[in-house]
Amino acid sequence: MYGDGVCCGTRNTRLRTPNVKHEARGVVRASEHGRTNQHLEACGVDLYLDQQAIDTTTPMGKLVFQLTGAFAEFERTMIRQRIKAGLKRAMAQGVKLGRPKIDSATERKVRNQLAKGVGILKVARSLGIGTGTVQRIAKEVG
Figure (cartoon, rainbow, N blue to C red):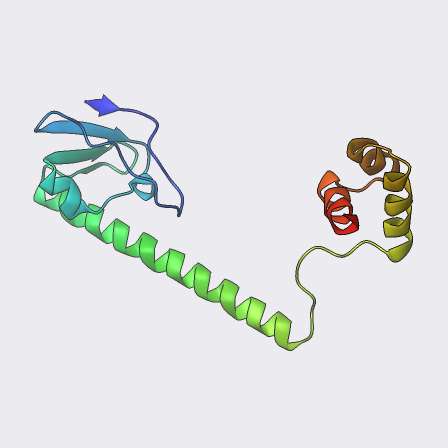
């Protein structure tokens, strides 16, 4: 059995393909596999998922694994669709998205302190704002 910290998430992360022709691979959950069953089969890799009792060396295990993958993809698509619909509705209602801008008085204070030669970190700490905001203002000043 070959086991390691397996990828998860929505980015293009991949499982490492073992060098051995037929080798079992340990994975924690079915949602954590990064490649399709067909690709794993082409590489000669079989999966055994202990928590879900899925073993892709058997026909029943392959079926359950494919169904689990299909449901996971469906669920992810539904979540993405709901998020897009919510953002569209919020924008139609005039809701401003993103971080709120700092007020002009605070921005003036930042500019004054930067002009005096105070460092970015000290300015940010003294005014209780992020260093990125101070850097942005410093970049605008010139």
